[in-house]
Length: 279
Length: 281
Image (cartoon, rainbow over all chains, first blue to last red; front, side):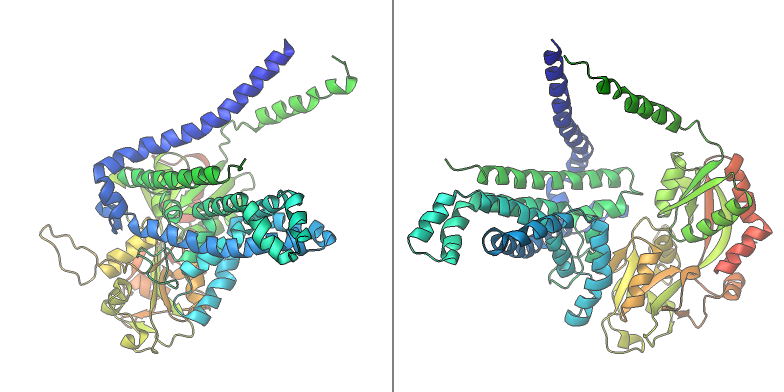
């Protein structure tokens, strides 16, 4: 009898977690859809003029900005992260892995505003002095985000590599392959789905990051045509304007949230599909 | 089921939690108020709150930023007791009670290594609109200008738009002047402090902040030959001046009323003058 009660209790809690997600989605769509209907889907997504005080709500520069910054961040994070995971899985001495892995997980605990702060104080002046431009740029955002997604990419790639059956590795070495050849031609392909899932989850984190990006991106309303130009992402737009937005402007910010929601839902679905273990 | 005596002790933290939760529920502490709004007014309000709480230890005053428009929204929905604004209210917002507390000049600032120290209104407008793109066009070195503006809800931005971006612009058929638009590629930051930090570290940057916040790392530009000093503000010769407003929803009562009285008194106004503002007459 008591066990049934506990079972029902846990079921209730589980359902409320799922219900929360549906509730948030419902609220965002309820506020955002009327505005997109009013402005027109094409005008909303494809127009380049964002001037809420004049009733213009084109978010194309911010969609392009978010995508540019995220893609570059994933390139940086994936390269560094996968290399680190490969090193930790195969070439690092056991004792060093016991130290390095917790330290990398610690990176995930650093608040994003601290990353932003370091970006403003160290990275932005460096980019300005070395490459020109104002320093606040696509490049600065991508570097900071790339570092922020490292713990995610490393942890999941490492798990994927360690999950490859030892038989594969032993068989390859027995056939005379070197350790690098084994890693590159046997273990990596075997861990492929896990590694791609790691990249996509890193991408999801990067596209949603707000605080650090506001501090280093410059938030200009132009379409970013060069890596050194300032940029505004979808998340920064919401955060900068939500304090005082009302009426249509506020609905437009909800609609921006809707677009983000859709993008992230698509990314996560792709991750789930690709990461399905092959039988 | 085993009746472990230790298990019965588990009820204690639950009870403790319930007691703490219950006592945490505020019974509407009348001595605590919050001010929210303009990031220009914020540091001055903080200083005044500090002085006030020094004399009245039972009062609790907390100050937040968020921008003028956010502050107006907050006080309209009664989230905070007093809103702070550095711009004039729009006709829809005029339902609030406005209490001017000081005059503030908006200083255009450049990096202290930038030799340009004087601009006309035309030049300032041209720079922030993106038409003048290089410092050598206004007598400086050959360097691309990086203009920095504030977010749309900023009172400082609204006042700057009204006083500088609209100056010299033609009136439309309704008699309204449409201000010149800011350059689309101008950097946008969300507080006076952030603008000052960027200008202090980038020799090519120009921005506008409350003149009370100018420090030795940035230089204030002379507008039409006039520097934003207290005398120039009071006499009206410096052209970019705005009022700092405290806003309340209906007549202020209790701590809010007492605090406002303090700010308008001689000691409050003297404190503001010390910090770089001009007293309200």
